[in-house]
Amino acid sequence: MSKIRGFIKLIVLLIFTLTTYSVFAIGLVVPKLFTRRYEPWRNLFMRTWAEGTAFIFNMNLTIEGSPPKAPFFLVSNHLSYLDIVPLYLSLRCTFVAKKAVQNWPVLGFMVDSVGVIFVDRNRRTDVKRVNALLSGAMNEYQGLILFPEGTSSGGESILPFHASLLQYPAREEIPVHVASISYKTGPKDEPARDSVCFFGARHGFLEHLMKLAQTREIDCTIRFGEKTAQSNDRKELAEKLHLNVQEIFEPTSMKD
Image 1: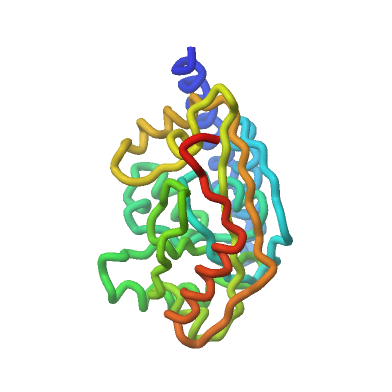
Image 2 (image 1 turned 90 degrees about the horizontal axis):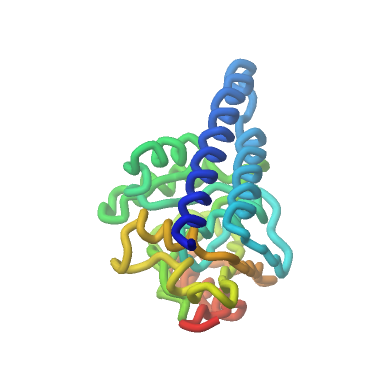
């Protein structure tokens, strides 16, 4: 029964995503035709998509603290591809993501078209290119979100932060905000660490997506820190931000 429920959810998600994206793509003609900024239209699409996705997966979102207003630079811990849903529901934003996502069939093109900035972390020279893009991506319509752990985790602790992509906020001495994401699942579901968190090589993407879809209820809490961190040294900035996230972090255990 749970597999049937999961399959139905994924079919509904696919139809919903393709429908809303088609409307978004058609609507892009207007800002391009009249040389207007596309971000307001993109923000509406992403919030609509996030609300629908949260409904399909029966996600209940709790927001603690005050989300920053654009423009902003924010870092967060990273547990799953699902993290973008609570973040899009809380903020007007775009993300810095692994270049591998850009190569995903269909989805990569869609993600690219909504303004996500891709970085090849296996090439040191790519960091310079990305930092140049970041300087033009922070504006009154959107903030930037970075997952400085460099990968997702099971949520037991916060992984060390990589300082390379913090070169831009360090160079410009921008105050950097922090957030922390945690998940819990319903009493009849597998623990969030095993069903929501996507990390390591335990499951392929599609296998994990089916496991996620079989979950009956997901409770997500996103906490925004009151303190910002600022430094012209990226390594020092990374250390400060790690401490700030740690202060508001709630671990995801094996049992909820």
